[in-house]
Length: 108
Image (cartoon, rainbow, N blue to C red; front, side, top):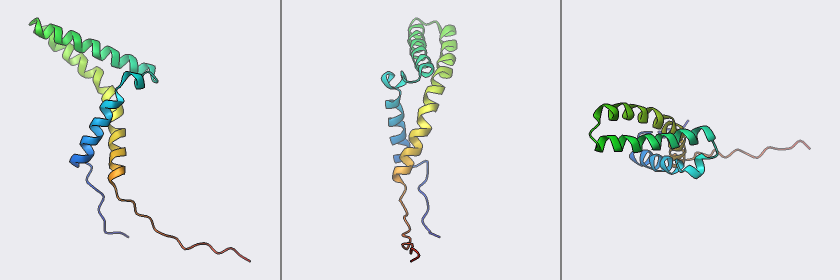
């Protein structure tokens, strides 16, 4: 048994690297491989544009509704990419422990 502790998952380096990599994963050229997620991403961008437009026009009733819709649309896009990137960033930082095994002897 080893006394080494695994690095904390909420480490600043892991979270920052995972966040950056998850946002690069939102590139439409990469999202087009999954048509459903691509449509969700495009729709969420359109809702964000209408949210900004209505906020600037002081239509707060519409802006509140559109904000809720934008949150619902962005959540699957971000929840799909962030945990995967988080695990990969944590795995890169985790020290590898390799136990050397004795070579097997072949029967003669």
